[in-house]
Amino acid sequence: MSYTYDDQNIFAKILRGEIPNTTVLETEHSLAFRDLYPQAPTHVLVIPKGPYVCFDHFAQTASDAEIVDYIRAVGEVCKQEGVAEDGWRLISNAGHDGVQEVPHLHVHILAGRVLGRMLAKG
Ligand code: DGP
Image (cartoon, rainbow, N blue to C red; front, side):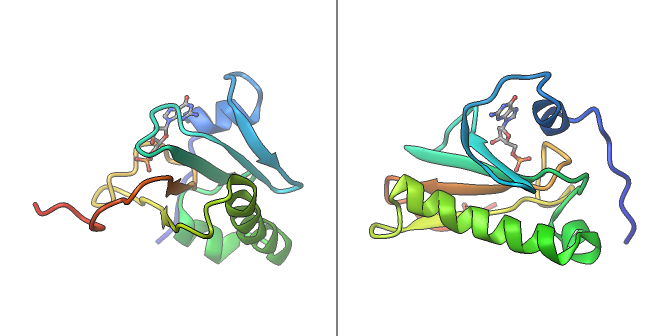
């Protein structure tokens, strides 16, 4: 699968500073910010700064430095948000069936309440 990155997506605009965001963490290769439509008391999105459509695209083409930075950023956000003790969920939607709305890789960090079963039926 080859991917084409659309640089007009909302997260690309956030990275260029064209749209405001509530930043939680910024590292050399990654940015974490609060989801505009939170689905849990803690709902943070973590994105790489590079132009990657989804996790698969990132895993195939990002540099080792970007991948290490990104994974560590997820861990650092969990630490900062204090969610480790009670638990949390990491989700990354991809493509049509994954119902990905924004075509720039992001993981959702969700926490702060019991989140229920992973998938609703149907
Ligand atoms: P997904 O379905 O995984 O592509 O989720 C995209 C998420 O992005 C969704 O939870 C809402 C969030 N979102 C959409 N637009 C904005 C925005 O302009 N700012 C922020 N902070 N989040 C946004």
